[in-house]
Length: 191
Image 1 (cartoon, rainbow, N blue to C red):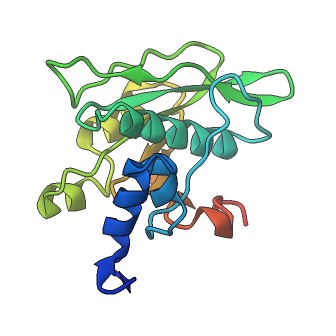
Image 2 (cartoon, rainbow, N blue to C red):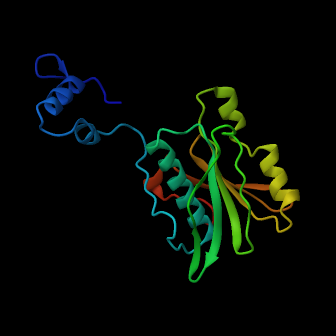
């Protein structure tokens, strides 16, 4: 999404970039990447990385899951996983993806070393659905409060790119990070 700036006798910047790409100067993606789009630049360190806190592992895991879905052009299916304790901190494994026939349902069995779960609620483009997805679903709330006897927290990346954690028997919902502003320091909780 580049701005349509006027350059060189009325030729738009977009047209100029496409022309340069067609001449073999550089791939269009590299030319477009040189101009800011207003979208946040997100990075994740990936599965297996050790983090000092559960929150830091969850932020990276959710960012990684989100970026994978974008790269695969598959934001219709839910993604998630678990965070577990390791020597020196916390980590997560490969991202689980919902089955094609049940894209909004993701089974996440927990193991004894797991300390939290995470899941991505993708934007749908429908305001009423996206507004509803800014809160944990009934199934997710029930899984934390009643199904899991340890009441392990559930980290959710919402359509607004806000990461919130739903934790405990009382069902406390806390903002953890805002991926719309990654350069301003992602973690909110614990500041």
